[in-house]
Image (cartoon, rainbow, N blue to C red; front, side):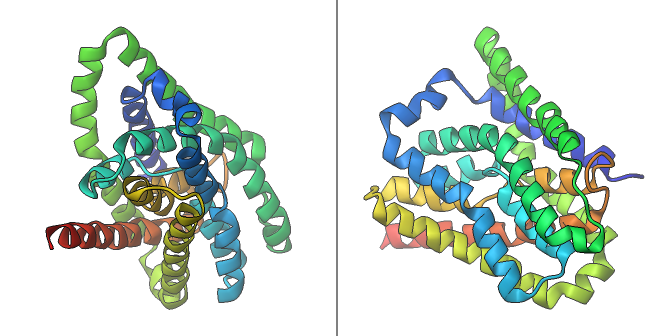
Length: 283
């Protein structure tokens, strides 16, 4: 069975679930708490530059370089709100950052990927159909978010019930998706695990450190710092996997391997971060 028939429905449901949790105030938070929102968005939008630097330092081949930048281009993951709650962070800020980054990256992702593919991939014959990528993002991400927002506005109780069910499915769905691709590409992953594992871990740790530095520079308080570190570190791996495997875009699951490894590592690292916060708060 073609994995695209699994990944696209999962991505669409995750984005629909995000829309079900959004209200107009979530998009207006930038006017009320500009420093925190801008700090989080800066961290999110500069992730591709960090990924490209890591790829060059690690001398990744073009496919894995493009794949690493791809996961870095994606918005915050759908589980970041839950992680922020567990870390006693600012959940309202987390929701707003996830929503805003999901909308903004619909347009920044194609542009950045076009640049990276042109500079890195053309030498080995890799091309990016940017129009197809933009259309796929609009259909599988923007449209489900809008439908979810509309449903919440007109049927808030129904939206709340649906969101409660779907939110419990988000993390297992992402792990299922990563597991399927891990099995499909186990030989390629095994052959390149040492360098890719280091590259993905390096990107994740650099993102967390960069987010912490941004929080310091923006003079943010503890809850905001915790939220932004989680939001910048957690990427929407389902979107990266969907773009990599889509027959309309790259149509090559190898581009998804960095996203698969990132999905696994980000949960390990961020759960450790949350656990450390809980342990410190008890003492």
